Image (tube, rainbow, N blue to C red; front, top):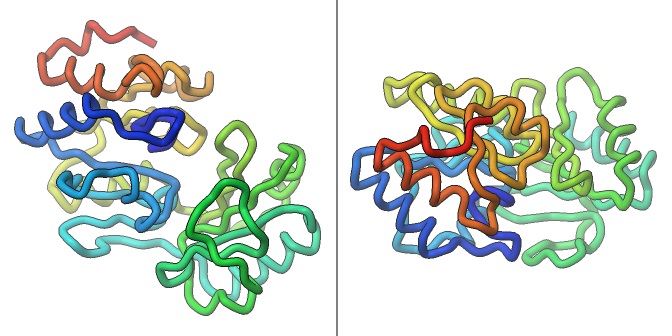
Length: 253
């Protein structure tokens, strides 16, 4: 979503919206996959547009048809231990999670909206889809990634700004696989478009994998095609080509 569907200033362009609506009119299901929590992910999307499904928190939750179809969460005991450990070993870092629909952080986040600053450990009273650590240095995130328990995994995204911690089996690819099975489809019948580390698996595993022009090199290497960047409406360009049956016109990876 960020760096793919949305421009760098967080907007969904009219052209991209029209392309997604055109896909739905053509009978093509549109799924938005994001590292954002469900409530936060909906903010940039106009109320009049309803994706066929949402894959949120990096694949920890799948929402479709007005309900949560699937979730793979971090248990309360594990999430509390993780946050205690992160705060003890990386005291200058910000840690946050979505708990019961509320975005809770242990300290203020730069430029972010809607977060409550709380004693995060005390507020982890139910399983969570994702725990996020923000650090001023990439080295902190790589250190934390190497020392995580086997029950969890971390994707380092946004150029090393965020560490997204999820249950070990969580990924956008696994979530999409479950969603497609619910619809009687398979990954080889899907197109995935992405730009960052948490997109690489489903770009590689879908029938057509598309990397954004602004994607990291590893995402481009995993892709079949490369479209324009997110500030050049790359998603719109590839969807318009799909509707014209002209995907071969998109740059080969």
